[in-house]
Amino acid sequence: MKKCSFGHGVTTGFIALFCATLAICWGVNERKLIKRKAKFFQQNGGLMLKQQLCSQRGSSENTKIFTVEELRKATNNFHQSRIVGEGGYGTVYKGELADKTEVAIKKSKVGAQSQTSQFINELVVLMQINHMNVVKVLGCCLETEVPLLVYEFIPNGTLFSHIHSKGQAMLSPLSWELRLKIAAETAEALAYLHVDITPPIIHRDVKTMNILLDENDTAKVSDFGISRLIPQDKDGLTTMVQGTLGYLDPEYFHSSQLTEKSDVYSFGVVLAELLTGRKALSFDMPEGDKCLSKFLISSLNDHRLHHIVDSAILNHENMETIKEVAIIAKRCLEVKGEDRPGMKEVAKELARLTNIMVKKQTWEKVDFVSGETQNLLGESSAPHCLDIESGSSACITAGYNSMQSQMLMPYDDAR
Image 1 (cartoon, rainbow, N blue to C red):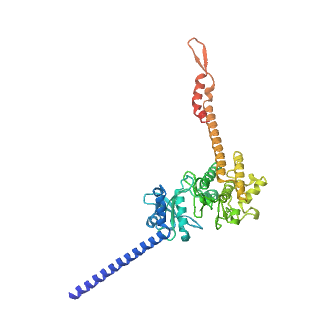
Image 2: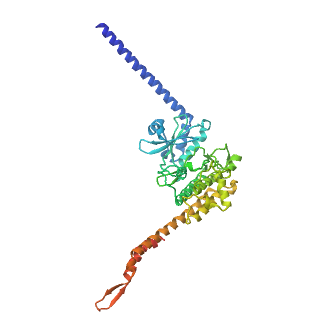
Image 3: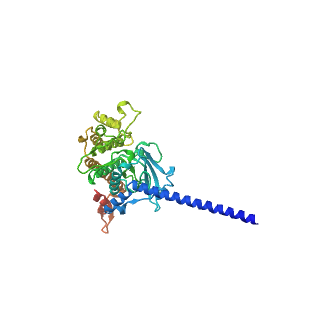
């Protein structure tokens, strides 16, 4: 009995010691994890960001500094199935926060620890952007080695996929009316970044992959991973050349001088894609046609525009507007930045063309409805003869004319 009691006591002691050791190890690891997160938070400028948000009136209410646990839960620990986009600058995950808000979480590949102050300043500016055609930055997480950015989630994919993923059941071809609307909205967003906020922001990577479409096909400019703020006392700045081949401003490429006109050039390539349905670079094409910007300009110079327009949008009714947009694209693609229009001017011109198209569609719809109404009432257009007590007959047309006027009155007002 004594041996059994002794053995039972030893076993219980070992179990208790094992549990205590596990608890100690867990506690040590937890403290290490807390210290590690605190170290990254400070290293990534967390305290500086908090101060900046407090100093900016209203910013702290609209933005949030997320914990890494919140974002892990939102993405199922950054599971591969949650990846919705990957590029040279990082990976984007779709997440769902505790309040069921859908978000996009960008995990960059490269940190910029030597430029923490600049990163925080730029982040604060991005958080204050409030434009319906710019993806909203909701907040960030600074508890990881590389800061994570949290954006609103845009569900309908990229403009690139809608233009170039032809034949996919989920993506129907974009009409010319919708392409023009998307172009006008994108131009408006870039004009806002260049002119309407202080300090101005140069996106530096304008391309169809960075233009998202929401459930209503509203354009949203995204991915400010390499964007730069322009100091108020300067027209541009000298910086290491970054961007995407095919969209890259040749003047910026050769001089390293970044200005708003670099975004204008890239936007010209986007217009060329919308017009032709071709990619910015087509390596399977003949040497002179590989670069879309050069291909569009040479086609315009040779009066061959109708040969290169995407067949999905080419028809007689669209051709005049297509020509005008092609001319805008050509101006944006001028080699010298000083010869290109500003985004404000481009946005104004595209808005004008969009309004003309909307009015034309409204008139066509009104004419169609009016015609249908007249057809339906056509049999009643003959005079109605009514017998009067005197035995004579009176032809009454006033009743029908009055009815027709009342039915068409809303359409006349609309005109």
